[in-house]
Image 1: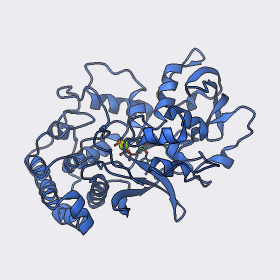
Image 2: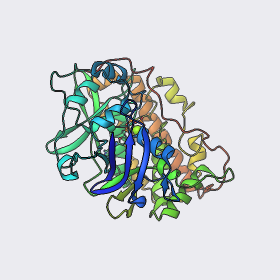
Image 3: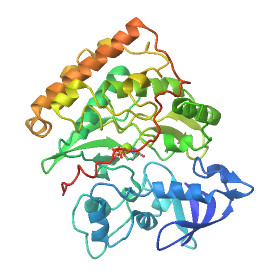
Image 4: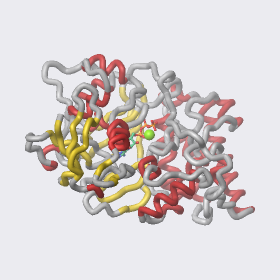
Length: 416
Ligand SMILES: Nc1ncnc2c1ncn2[C@@H]1O[C@H](COP(=O)(O)OP(=O)(O)OP(=O)(O)O)[C@@H](O)[C@H]1O
Ligand SMILES: [Mg+2]
């Protein structure tokens, strides 16, 4: 397929895509190099094709997404990259797309922010049979990232992301709400989540926080804008990249994210689980995006006694343990601990329904509530006793390889 890589209404580069694999075979004229995806270099009149292919591949549903193999079989499509071609690469998290040569398509006609989209792809991703004969691929579900089963839906005119949990406890949807409530109490910019039930299973729902004017650029892409030297810590590398790009207020936002992740013992804050917002037309950096995807936390896959012990909690993205990562926080002065007095009640309130108790388990709910309390007390003590170390420059304990949690072995149930 010969097409133009578009950024909203602006032509960025002419591309030739391999119809059989979905890979970018050639990049011809680049007409707006500054609009190339962040982290794709442009030197001597040429864009880095390997980097553009990485970006393009990351746009497709990961091969490890729960239920994706069944979905591909039912659609008779060999890989998820080919799904990108069926929806022009359109997303609800950014403003990039591909315009096939000679199609005459415009942003106004096809973007998903203003135009409705089909439920067909979401239905298949949620295990329903393929709708025949006129299956409609036009859906932002073809470009959604992450392992958990998810789909976009327009609810009362708002674009919303509906996301399941992983077996055996399917706790992530509740955790998203607990995390949102903690952030609400502490004044941390966040994406609000709620829980809905469908056919006996919990799902989290949140609105699209990207608008017609903005877009999310993952921290992973920001990290690609500079080469990291071994002597620079992962944290400092990210801060340096942000500062060179001119992204405002990064350190206070990271302070808040790190504290939240400590409080909820988040195990999956990898570099695609936070990011930066920018204006897609002016390219003005707006700051760190509101915090989303905090569900793989609060011992979501652990037994009650493991949760109580507090051991074996994985930490990302900067340090290997949450205690070390907390040392990166530049200030704790902004935390109003009185707002967290009811942390325990919050957990019980959100997991109070009979359905939630059955699925998460009452003993585990007690352990989760205790964990939140203990973690609040730890941070409070730290803030009373000492100034945080602000170990921004130390590479000790750095995360070496940043990978997202893989639930594939845990997610063999079928949502329909
Ligand atoms: N409210 C939102 N508005 C816009 N984009 C979003 C929103 N929520 C998530 N996204 C985008 O969708 C991607 C997948 O969502 P999310 O991270 O919640 O899924 P996940 O399956 O929990 O991911 P992971 O594999 O990290 O566990 C995010 O990385 C982000 O790019
Ligand atoms: Mg995620």
